[in-house]
Length: 303
Ligand code: PLP
Ligand code: CA
Image (tube, rainbow, N blue to C red; front, side, top):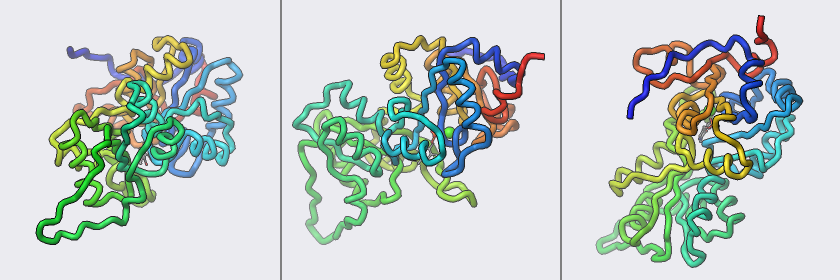
């Protein structure tokens, strides 16, 4: 079905928006921080929302860290946020496998970084791969046959700076040759910000695309904009989705995630989306509201 939404409105009365919901879900990169740098006014804004009794939840598609590692990052930035308030796509992959009762005797092949391994470990799920396979090479001698573990029940793919041909072939064999093997993507963001000098390939999307290309299979995505994390956290905290405002800087992940969940949506222009991108005729994703940055909550009062 196709629904047309009204064009996004500039946020003019933050109190009205704040009063209309119980929970704020914040995307992280581009909303709370940019890389390792806190965005201006964030601590004061979170304090204001907490003082008004709002529940705050943080959702990131970046799978390189675990919830616990993100907890440390928030602490380093001077923000008091507990692990239980953080939903990273690394955690989502492990939570998804738990939710389907992934068999204890099966293993996951991981194409991704440490965050996914840590979350699988905490969930009691066996795995192979990860950064350990980053320096593996294939010697293409005549007759060479790559073996793969027949107990792999899922291949989980996320952003991986140690990505190589060995992992592509291993993951592809698992998906093609193990009956019922799942193909799970933490996220498919197209770019990441390794340095601020340019955009860098693949916030996960390039690695997921490689496996999709070789297997001709569509992955099951557990990160934004899929509804898995929304359903999971709404269920865990007992929140009505109409009582949530999703705040993010990306239209095709964050704003769609909020809209797929039936939440209110606020786009902030402190990350990857500019006002001209929002208002471009090529863009069909319209949040309810947009504003420059979340600290506008401190100043945008009704007149
Ligand atoms: N994945 C990677 C590897 C990233 O570096 C980023 C942003 O820096 C993202 C995903 C998107 O993260 P978020 O959902 O917090 O904007
Ligand atoms: Ca973001």
